[in-house]
Image 1 (cartoon, rainbow, N blue to C red):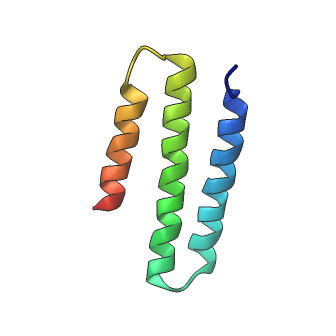
Image 2 (cartoon, rainbow, N blue to C red):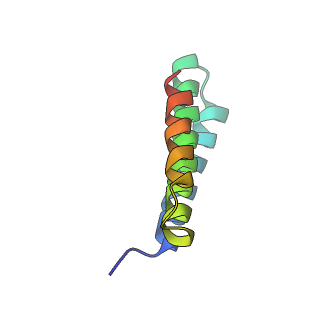
Amino acid sequence: MSIPVEYYLIVSTLLFFIGVYGFVVRKNLISILMSIELMLNAVSINFVAFNRFVYPEHLEGYMYSLFVIVVAAA
């Protein structure tokens, strides 16, 4: 029994819009960068969720997610 993809999308959407809200409202640069990090993490959740449910034998979603994490760290 696995978690449906809709639950991943709901969590990702909430995380993304929390990041957008923080990006729009905050004035501090560190807070804005943390909000961008939240948005990038939401995108990573989408990549992994869609990869797991659509093409479980391929690794493209995981590689894109790893790339997003590397870009966010830089």
